[in-house]
Image 1 (tube, one colour):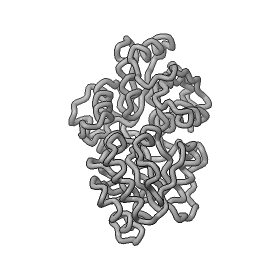
Image 2: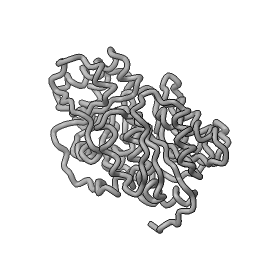
Image 3: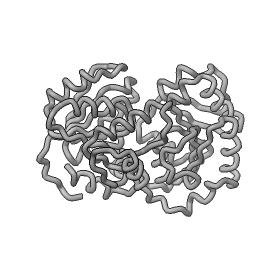
Amino acid sequence: MKQKVIKLKNLFVIGTRPEFIKIAPVANELRSTILFTNQHFSKNMSTYFFDLVKNCEIIRLKNNNNLIQSNVKDYIKKINPDTVTVQGDTNSTLMGAIAAKSLKNLKIYYLESGIRNYDLREIEETNRILTSSIADINFVNHLNNKKNLIKEKIPGKIHVTGSTVYASLDNQGLVDNKNLPEDYALLTLHRPINVDNYQRLNSILRNIDKIGVKFIFPIHPRTEKNLEPKSFNNIEFLKPLSYKKFIRLLKKSKLVVSDSGGLQEECVIFRKPLIIPMENPMRPELVNKFNLLIQNPKSISTEIKNILEENSVLSNIENIDNNIYGKSEVIDKIINFY
């Protein structure tokens, strides 16, 4: 990667683990300042990821589960950057964009723009749509994302650059996939539509548990409070893991059940069959090739059995080109716009 002469003061506003992972390769190259909102308030969910951005200054807001736009705006004014970059679909993403927009002469960059499932029951979808409409520069992972933004007639510019996920994995020495699968599957759930509904969450878990296959579930703090206590025999619950430990678990797993957006890309890189307990796809280019959408919890167990018995539409996953979102060259493409 060519060394870029940094002319501008660049600020990244982020609040969650996935945002740290995805902005790290870009923020490090730009030697940026990072305003961390503490949206992920658990120590395990936050501080484990600071070492991903070693070339950056990190400024932390006080523990604050209820993000306040004025707080973010005040910090941006103190830092006085030339650009503000946000990523993803969290409340921190939208608050950072709105706060920056209210200040003059700030250019707003949005990483991973244009992802849509058009399900407005999800706060993440509202965050995505509003942030795209605010951003001056929209970096998108795939041509489908660009088409979404063109359809919405957003005012900002659109650049198809690919995703930063591969570069983040590569920078940590995690791309190698020579591990043979072990006798377990991996489970993660955190979307409000799945975990804030007590009945739906536990229905998903019961249908997974009854298969008799060991599932490892690193549990998100918001998910843990809605679990039926001591109800599952084949699900091993873990506290949140460091990113490296999580990826090592992923690489050795047989398959994955998850509602995570970022994990969809990591499953592609490592060719792991993925079942998504959601109704609408965020990455339609992956559906029925690298993952399956299963809305009904009762159908999840059937699809898991099909995958394990190699009787699934995903059984050909080893033979499909998995360079969907680019590799380490993506970072050069992005930083050239700063």
